[in-house]
Length: 139
Length: 184
Ligand code: SF4
Ligand code: SF4
Image (cartoon, rainbow over all chains, first blue to last red; front, side, top):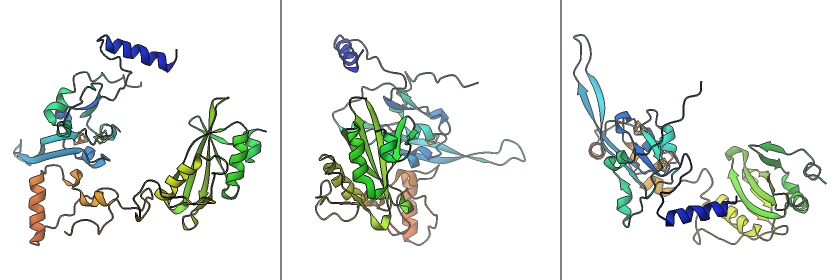
């Protein structure tokens, strides 16, 4: 089978209204599981295109025991990725130490305004639907 | 003739790619011989800035009959960044040499590389590792914020700096040397 005929078949299927058949590990868009994000800023610093914007604030939790100390937490206020700048390198996903970022195969995100390519945290959460289950760990 | 005979040494294989180092003086001659072995399709020529070790010019050729490729590399020192031209071997190499000449500041001996991509009178060679990208200095870097900070915190700190009260050292983006950027 040649690449050409696979392409032709794929095209015919799309025209017939079938959902796109995507290869494994397709890079559609980036999803954020914000429960896992500790606001460490690593992704924003490593992104070569500077397209990740993060705002956060500090929150102090009172000591839980009598001799304990109050704890400072970082709370996420804004997480946005500008997909107009992003080049799909995946560095942010690789670098995240807390498994908060994932590749989602969802790819139909064309818009008519460049500003609509800035996906805020609510959008980034939506893209979690369809993120494939990670492969089993090596034993 | 085999590739090893033409090169005078056995090429190495790296990730399935056949790679050979070629002496700068024999660059054009060796490439001619490799071409005549069947690697007749010129794929790409580019360069790598190895900093203290100079520049590496990288060439990939393809053998259309045998359907296999080879990567040839040659080195030149930083202070004598010149490599013989391949335009006599592959006319199409001229285009790539013009790009490499502009972006890396490499002279291709025997080829008056006319400017290709950058604007007339552009100062510097943007793919050299010591070239500072001015936009990286001028643009606000999202990574400057620390965990637990917002844009408002950053702005407040800048104000504090101007009144001489701020003192924190900020993380700087890669590629921006110390001393560059807005006065603090
Ligand atoms: S994929 Fe690359 S360019 Fe896009 S947000 Fe992540 S690090 Fe930045
Ligand atoms: S690297 Fe991961 S945990 Fe750190 S800020 Fe980015 S998404 Fe959050």
